[in-house]
Image (cartoon, rainbow, N blue to C red; front, side, top):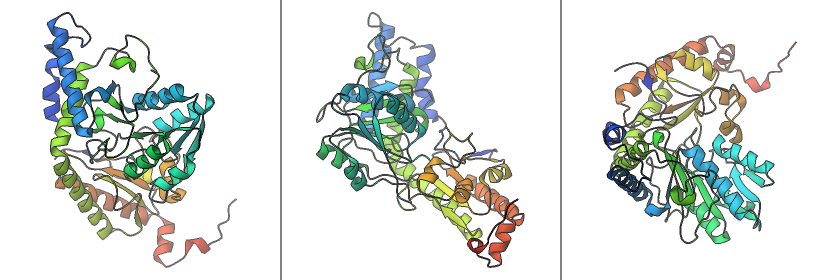
Length: 404
């Protein structure tokens, strides 16, 4: 076992060896441009892209023609939200999303507000979930899009996507779900789950970085988008630019592996998370699970350690690669916007750590990590006067603190 131990699978995943082996020939041997229709190099590349498109479509139960390749989820989110806004803006300018969404959705929504769109930001419940009823209550005559994530990247809570989709379908409103954390980790079926658009990235499913996809429904209803990048008319005019053939091949293979191994991967990650949390809760008090304990991603454990500062805790176990929030915002010292939206207090929010377990994680990794966490928390709490007071039975809420 080599250190540090990687436990940040919501941020990114290692490339599966089966994926890498499939990609390699497309860098050096089959290096043609998939849009080159006049020679064998282009035909081979195009065939590889078609194969990947079929593999991706199979994983999410879509048609191959409904898969649009992008550079990743952030680009796909921008294409979905801005593309719908431009196409359907004459019908209405109201969009519904949630305060606990990834910054890629929230920042896109803020940009659209500057363009004259009105955004309703739903408050999630204490577990980080959005109910179908709250979506129904927020829909208006001028609502053109609902954007609610499938599973939260920080706390792992899984939203009732099928029910939300049914409400949107009933009301005639398009439904887009950022599915970056869900695809390849839990079952996703675009037909049964009533979604019109979803996005995902290769690097979250043991594929390469810099490639992703947007699913765009073609019938019942047919979704139309205004392209956000103009050029050679690639991807049926929705996303111009020379296709990243090795990356697309890797994404396709990653999806094929995920489909074949889904049940096994879910069971593996679930077992590791339960083993980790049992060790933590058996040894430490004042530890809290953030998110829905019973309805979250298999490999996600977001824990708050009261009376310990999260950044200090991370410094305390340098042999573990973990996160104190989303990888895209972890450089900020602000409390997680997701935990704030869930009404987790600032003190607990600042003491939260996200542990991510995945395909390459072992029981030995988990045991080592749990021991490191327990040791670090106990050491820091020895230095905490607040923890000492609580141990003595003092109710901290009754103390009148004075400052100078």
